[in-house]
Length: 255
Image 1 (cartoon, rainbow, N blue to C red):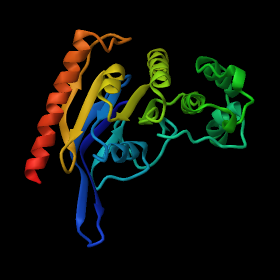
Image 2 (cartoon, rainbow, N blue to C red):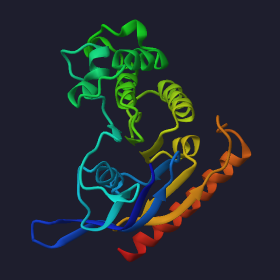
Image 3 (spheres, rainbow, N blue to C red):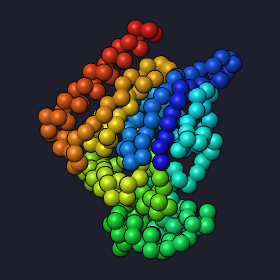
Image 4 (cartoon, helix red, strand yellow):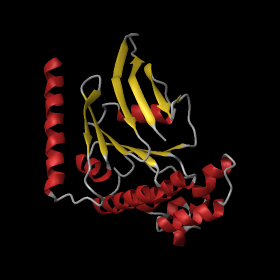
């Protein structure tokens, strides 16, 4: 699926009835099979942008197109993974993974698909466990399996690994890249972690300013898996940091 964001802006009405813009004039596209990272400091509107692509919120102006058609609401072709694992406590792991597909009647080969993704995520031995019996990392892997079992064209991820320890983060990031390479879905991942952005993405959209706009789009052509200690990785990190500093100080001068 190709996602096109065209001159997108989002504002909210303040208590005094004035209009507060969070995002202003956002334009970029995600081609089929891309792994796009939306990178920016906390509070800059990354999650708001993700929610509009998911169809949960509407833009104030501009539009978002999915394969040429304007997004007007949520659709199973776009699956989302949130910051905290959201599992139904009275269902088992396998029941949680299958739940969304069953609700919308997508049951063809569902048992096979559930087992397939439980195996991929290393959860086959925990299929009968309840969420309160899982570690945080296992809960996140269950949510990832649930997001992918419906075979979405686009996977949207809202800082899903931020609450995990460093070792679990590293492991799940590698699993996510391997899944993306094998399953051929498109992904849009929101983060404020520069190293995470470079490790995962083939395109990084850097947001900054107030209201937030696109400061720069970085195309990353390094092969996977990526080595955080490599010279090319460090070069990209320095370029992003320098560009971020420019937008940060420009914002402070305007204020």
